[in-house]
Figure (cartoon, rainbow, N blue to C red):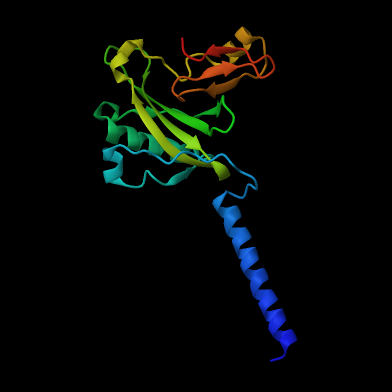
Length: 195
């Protein structure tokens, strides 16, 4: 083999590995070049660790999958939440830069005394690069009974828009996705999303 042929073969190998590395990097980051906001590693309760499967990522754009995972996680973590009904996932933005977005799945239960179903629990997910959702935690509020809200967030987008004087308020969280606020993106004014 000539030196030229060896040089071309070596260059081809380098290019192949370079393209492979670039492709793998894009897959891991969800195809988003420059994506720097990673979701936190799930800190699973013992009940979920023993079941398995909750430390993986889920499609943040699949409400049915998130609802099913939330329902399974809630029932495993708290027996009070067995048999609850998941509502559509609610998306939230992090108030602080560099924090991941969140998704909260409210779980409702029918009241023994009648009346509308009330929120009995909340399950959070954090969304990282590539639109992948990672399990956050479960909040069992079933003890509130008839004092629990009928939906999450309690303050609707329309009500928040009227109170903030804006047409498109953002739902943001600071400490935990379970207690978000509505924010006017122009003025920065906020109101609690719970009554």
